[in-house]
Each structure stands twice: as C-alpha cells, then as structure tokens.
Image (cartoon, rainbow, N blue to C red; front, side, top):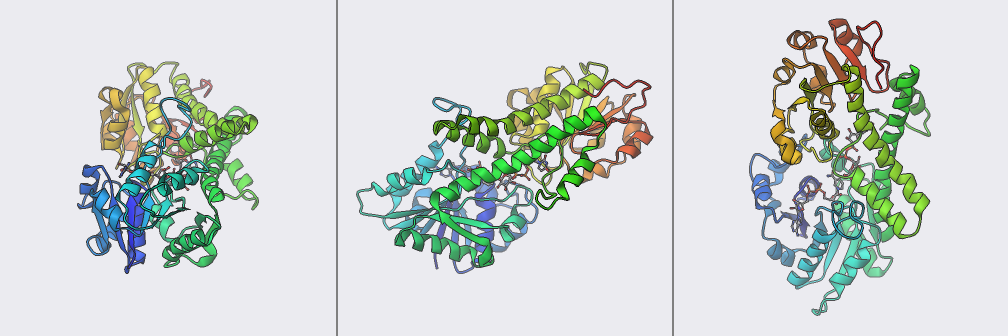
Length: 462
Ligand code: NAD
Ligand code: UGA
C-alpha cells in the first residue's frame, strides 16, 4: 500500500484524488486543506463543488481508501507521495503584479513538507506553475538538515471543469515530467504506475521536468487562443453578414484545424486561461522575448474586448440606453455544468450593465451562491433569482451568458408574454433557436450572426 496525499482540496485536488482512489483500491488517498469548511463539505453529502458524476465516485470510496482532513502536518509525515494542488493565482502585488503567478501558497507547502517529513518522499507538482518552478521546489525541499532526499515530479492537470470526472477517467493524455537521473526516473515511474491502473500506456507521456511544466501553460494558451480567434472572426461576421457557426464549421472541417473549441461566445472565463496566459507572458518578458509576450497577451486582450463589446452591442441595440431597464442574465457559471464563477464572462457582463445603471437579475441552476461571493461589493446591487421565468418577468432583455442546456428548453413564448416590449434577447453562446425566438416576437442578437429584429431600420448591432 502506498500512502498518497494531496495538499489542496479544490476543483483539482478533490476530483483527481477521488478518481485515483477509485482506480487504486490498494492505495490510501488523503486530501488535506487548510480550509476547514471545505473539508467538512467534502466529508458531507453537499460536496463543495458541483461536477457531474463526482458525488457517486466520492460516496463510493470515501471512508474506504479516500479521506478528507485538515491535519496537514500529520498526513505529510505519513505520506509516501505528495501531490501539491494548491492555488497559484495571478500575483496582485509587488514585482510582476497582474501577470506573474503568486507562488506563496506553493512555497509554504514546500516548507511544510520539509518540516514534517521524517522519510524521503516524491513531491508531485499538480498545480499549474511557471516553467522551472521544480528547481526552486527541489532547493527548498533538499536543503533540509535531516539528510532526507525529495524527488520532484511534474504532473500537470488537464481536466476541464464540468467534465472533470470524464476527463480524469478517460484522459487524452497524462503528462509526467521528471529528472533524467536514476532517482528521478524511479519517481516518475511511481507516478506512471498510479495512472497505469486505468490509462493505456500509450497515453502516458513522460518528458523532462521543464517540458512538462511548460506544456501545461502552452496547452491552455493554445486552447484560449482558439476561442479568441473564432471570437475575432465573429466580430467580422457581424459586420459582413457571414455567420460564424457556418465559418467555424467550414474551418473545423479541415483536419489540420479540427472542429473542437471553435464556439464563438461572449468570451472565455474560468480561473485558469487568463492567469496562465498572463503567467506565460510574464515568463516571456522575463527571458527578454518581448514579441512573443505581446503575441500571447493579445489572446487575453481579445477576450476582454469580446466581453465589453457584448454589452456595448446590447446598449446600442436597446436604443442607446439600458439605464433603469431590468435585464435578466441567464447563467453566471463560466461555462455549463459547473458551479464555478471565477473570471466568468457573465459576471463581467453583469458589472458592465451595472455601470450602465441597468437593473440586473442573475439566474443560474448551480452557480448563484458563488456569483454572489465573486461579485463582492456590487452583489448588493443585483437580484439573484434561481427561476429563469421569474428572472425574465418584467425584463426588457435577456442576456444569455452560460450555455446551460436547460436555457435552450425554456418556454420562450411564455417568457415573451411577461417581458416589456419590444423584448430583446442577446444569445452570448449561440445555443438558442434564433428563428423561433424571432417568430415569437423577440429581437434577437447572437454572436457572429446577423441580428433578427422587428424594426424596419434596426440599429446596427455595434
Ligand atoms: P482551488 O482554489 O479550487 O483549490 C486550491 C485549494 O488549496 C484551496 O482549497 C486552498 O484552501 C488550498 N490551500 C492553499 N494553501 C494550502 C496549504 N498551505 N495547505 C493546504 N491547503 C492549501 O484551486 P483549483 O482550481 O483546484 O486549482 C489548483 C491548481 O490546479 C492551480 O494551480 C490551477 O491553475 C490548476 N488547475 C486547475 C484546473 C481547474 O479546472 N480548476 C485545471 C487544471 C489545473
Ligand atoms: C481549461 C482547459 O480546457 C483544461 O484542459 C485545463 O486543465 C483547465 O482550463 C485549467 O487549467 O484550469 P476549463 O477552464 O475548466 O478548462 O474549461 P474550458 O472548457 O476550457 O472552457 C474555458 C472557457 O472557454 C469557458 O468559459 C468556455 O465557455 C469558453 N469556451 C470554450 C468558449 O467560449 N468557446 C469554446 O469553443 C470553448
């Protein structure tokens, strides 16, 4: 039996360890966190995050070979392998503020591991980190006076929220990076052996440490770049009469491009794309690669433009003012099937609408509580309404910001009757039946498509 510990019981630590525990019944898996409330939730029936399929897996292994605890020090002492999955947000202070990764939680963990260890261990970087962080980690860990040696392995996580369980159980690849020394190779093999319980060996990629660390940042940058690229084209579609769905289909049919991740939208959100690209930008600048930095920064700038221009299109279409108008924002999660609202475009839209003095009503099936928390000081100016029908009642417009499938199945004819007319709908995810909505009476504005309105001379969408 191997004692596996994960430090950090968040969106990554919880689901990844639950899947490891399920597939490796002979190992004991413990997940620790300094946040006692979160640990209590992991121990209860109300898990701290919503992920399809997660509860079933947790309930199947919890108390058998999966445990949640706040006793960080004790479990460090007992562990053979420690995955570190703490948060690595963008730094908000000092050197590199607004770009570099804030590694304070990460470094604290490293020091805590040294203090509480009485035996050598494998320490696994699960968090997303700047390339060459493992070097700093090794220095902190191996400068101990106990004569203990720690191997550092990089095993970045590629799961996406909303599909975390499926992504873990059936990953495109698992990436494991380590030192090319005998000890480093042995440590890497120990991590390979865990995943080999359920992942075919062809999908387990082993590399050197730096390739593994950099591949994680690069993968997120490439994915976000696709969204910004199709959103850039969507803007041109709106000016020219082309339809972005048709264009995306035509582009994606080329097998060199591929069809996935070409959904034009109100912008990408989530806790990682922006922070990881800014981290990449900072690293490029650090190494004097200013043109490379500028290239990647444009992906984030395009995303900010996309979110802001969604609201300016709304204002223009609604006779150049939304002041005092009730606007129902459908969806607060940064994508469907998650309760996470970190960096959600819905909240960016909400803030911009508040700046325009609109009366904003937010509705979401799972993410209203986290929206309230993430909105902070402006939460008091917003109404939170779990029922989309009630949210739309008396509204001048609906702004759909999250692609929850249930939003496509609502009775829009009934909704239309309860709204102020002329009624507007802005589909920031292109999931609604625009022709049907137009036939009901709505003035319909989608992303990258010609508007469908009932005005003889519709105001331009932008
Ligand atoms: P999170 O904020 O949900 O969870 C991190 C947890 O670490 C928190 O609960 C926090 O209390 C805990 N923590 C911080 N310091 C600690 C300490 N010293 N001891 C014990 N616990 C501590 O973050 P997350 O979304 O799980 O992301 C974790 C890392 O994984 C980040 O680097 C992120 O970039 C990366 N990542 C995230 C995702 C995702 O979908 N969210 C996917 C892939 C990679
Ligand atoms: C992303 C990556 O997909 C994961 O591989 C990675 O592990 C993770 O970041 C991370 O490092 O945190 P996630 O942010 O959970 O996962 O979700 P995505 O499915 O990538 O969506 C990100 C954002 O892009 C969402 O707001 C989504 O709505 C938006 N998006 C995605 C689009 O607007 N269009 C698309 O075609 C795809």
